[in-house]
Image 1: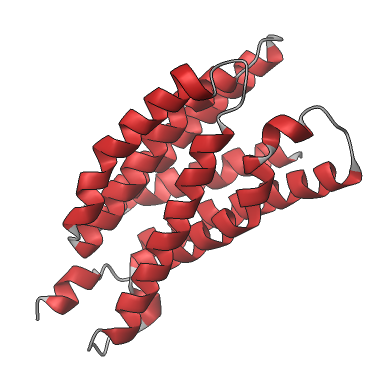
Image 2 (image 1 turned 90 degrees about the vertical axis):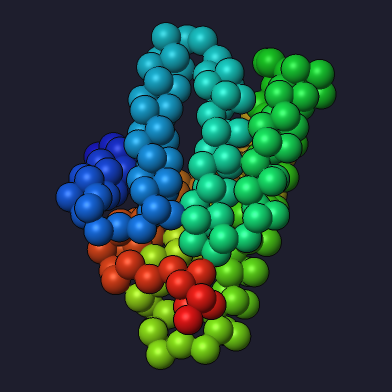
Length: 212
């Protein structure tokens, strides 16, 4: 059983868990459920394109702005921070500009991914800060976005260097490249496993706590 099969199994469990809990999960979690579903479809398509001998970079040029936008929407529904909502069209436009004029095919879209991972890190830290200062008796583990933020933070910090320099390391076959690749596999498992936990825990949002 290779890394790809394990990855698909985790994604499948996340999708099934999300659909099983669909009636009770928050609007934020429904966004992240959609994100997992699109990720699953994208990885299947990317794999098939790669097996055909063609480059699958176009798939990720399309996927990453969609991924970023849905994740931002998930953070917005949980926090009600309008600044996040206003950033979504800007990130879509930025993805288009970078993919057409700055880093077009056959390059991997490392610039956009680096910016995306930076924002994921920033949003996760901001969310943690909100959890620390809000007056509530609800435990951290009972906020679904806490788990997703943990997964995003671990994934983003671990892979910022790797994915940000992908075009360079694609030309090499070094020990460092192999270490970074396996780190990416492992943090992918952590990220999407955090979605499973988020779908299963009590469905509290930070915006509800500030509204009390």
